[in-house]
Amino acid sequence: MSEQEPIKIVSKPGEPKVLITSTAVRGVDIYHFPSVSDPRGDLTVGELDRGFPFQPKRYFIISGVPSSEIRGEHAHRQCHQFLICAYGQCSVTVDDGTTRLEFQLNRPSIGIYVPPMIWGRQWQYSADAALLVFASDLYDPADYIRDYDAFLDEARLAK
Image 1 (cartoon, one colour):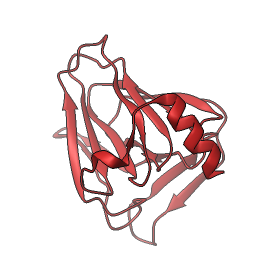
Image 2 (cartoon, helix red, strand yellow):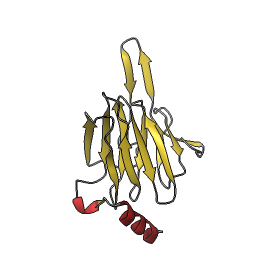
Image 3 (spheres, rainbow, N blue to C red):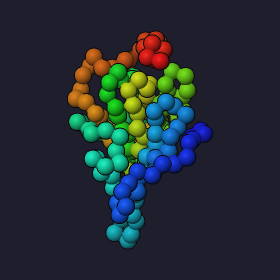
C-alpha cells in the first residue's frame, strides 16, 4: 500500500469499531473490521447497515480462479462495490484515471470500498481464494465501462 490518510473510526459507543483508512485513489477506502480469535476459530463481523459505505442489493463470489487469470478490468458508472477476500488471498488494483494503487486482500477482516468511476482489476489469486463482492445495484450491463481508454475519457469528463 502507498501513502494513506489517518484512520477514521466508524462506530457508536459500545459497538464494534470499524477502522477506515483512506487511500490516494479518489474515494477508495480500506476497511478494517473487528476480528476475534479464540480456540474455536476466528470471527470477523461487519454490519451492513452500520459502518458500511452503502446498502448492498446483491453479492457475488469469485473463486476457482487460476493464478495467471485477471478478473474485473472494468469500472462502473453508478454501482458501488465492496470487496473482501473471505478465504485465501488476491491482489486488487484500483485506478481513478490519475492514481493507481495495488492492495493485497489476505484476511476476511479487511475490505476495500470501490466507488463508481474507479477502474478495478483482481489478480494473483491463491488457489483457495474466495473473493466476496457486495454491489449497490442489481446487475446492469450498461453500467460497465470495459475499455480502459473509454474509462479515461469518461473520468476526465466527470472531473
